[in-house]
Length: 332
Image (tube, rainbow, N blue to C red; front, side, top):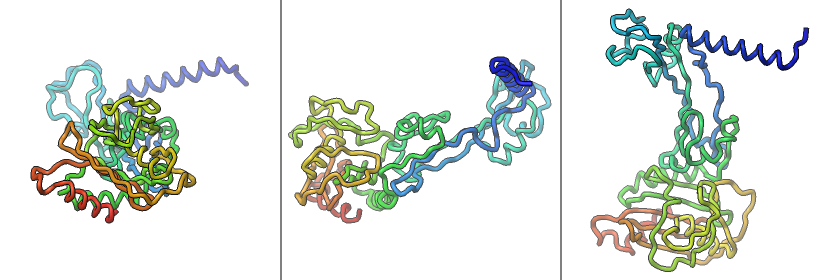
């Protein structure tokens, strides 16, 4: 016999409610322990290679229903996790462990009043990509590309970026082998498309969006910049105090192309211009810190470096530093 939609819906919600109630009251975790409910899509480089590693993480909670935890005969499977019985509350959820192996999960999920919850950890495949990739918490992207493309990634769909793993490896090893240059950030852009090909950051924040304090003319940068990660994109910056490396990059991409070219994290299907052979070079000490920023051109690529100053000023004179950076560009 068929039932009306509203009646069927009421019955279905009633059964679901009973199932969840039974799961909690019996102490059986209703969270899937062997696989996550939703698989998050991957962030990929331009050739489809993954830029992040997915790792399932499992936590175990003990459900306490008001009985005194002192003197109780706890099952041997959870005694290992109850290091100090005095810290166990009488009622509520008590975290037994936040990093379980699959073998531990299989043992604990059979124990009464134990709930197993699965979560997903995301880790960038290349060191220095974290500020760009961003972070995931509670299954949602909270920063970087993880946040920008969260609606797509949560559906299990992957996103292709403009980054190239071949060049990311070069940047990684370059920074590892030439640490004496005090590099804090490296970026490589394809001039003819504006695509970001390689990136490295020493810190936790994206240095491409960091505000710079410059004290001289810099190609008359007063234009808008479109950038996928910039929360204030498309906003005109009226003074040098609001300039970021992205504004300098956009200005030099435009200088090399002869028309507006915007930096982007997404792949382009075709070239937007034929870069001129004119030499491009910009070096400036930052007034608000003991740092410098350097931009230079080689073929169809614009290289951007952010670094710190050495204690020995003679060792890192402008000419010496410039020669060192030109050497790194050849390595890339």
